[in-house]
Structure formats: structure tokens, C-alpha cells
Length: 104
Image 1 (cartoon, rainbow, N blue to C red):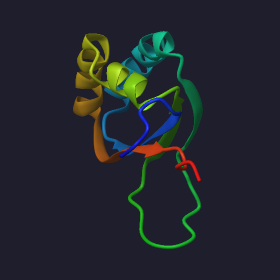
Image 2: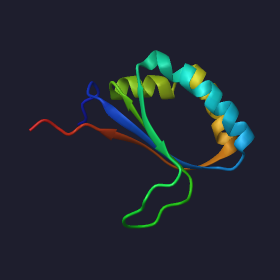
Image 3: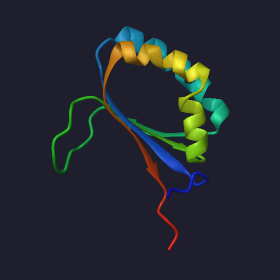
Image 4: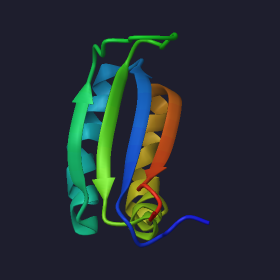
């Protein structure tokens, strides 16, 4: 069972197909993210793959205070509406929630 109160990382990997629509998504993204006290860690359009295969595109990492907060943001009416622009402009390869290490 995961701890829903520890920090989690949101990792998304996608390929932008329509830069104009994606720019509209980017403009709205940070205002929708800000109320959730998340920290945009990084993004990379050209990662170095050390092993395995990877589709071209952008990888984004965001830290949220908890799984509960991440899911509140993901399911918020504001993000659900904004995500329509993402769906229209990118091919999503993966969206992952990575939990903190379990207590030892």
C-alpha cells in the first residue's frame, strides 16, 4: 500500500504534434498548477538514453506534496479542461506517478 501523504513525482513523456495548440496548453499550465504547491522540476526535449528505446519528444518531471494533491490537480475541472489542448496537440507515450521510497 502506498503512502498518499509523501511527496510524489509526476513524469510525462510525449511528442508534440501541433506546436501552436501545445503553446496554448503551456500558457495555461502554470496558473493551473500553482494552487497545488507543486514544483516543476525539469523538462528535456533531448534526453540521453543509456539503455533501451524511447520515442522522440519531451519528458517533464513535477514534484507534488502528496499523491492526494497530484490526483486533486489531475482531476480538477481546470486541468481537465486544459488537458483537452494537450490531447489535441501531443501523442502521450506515458504519464507516471512515482512514489517516495518506503520507510525502512
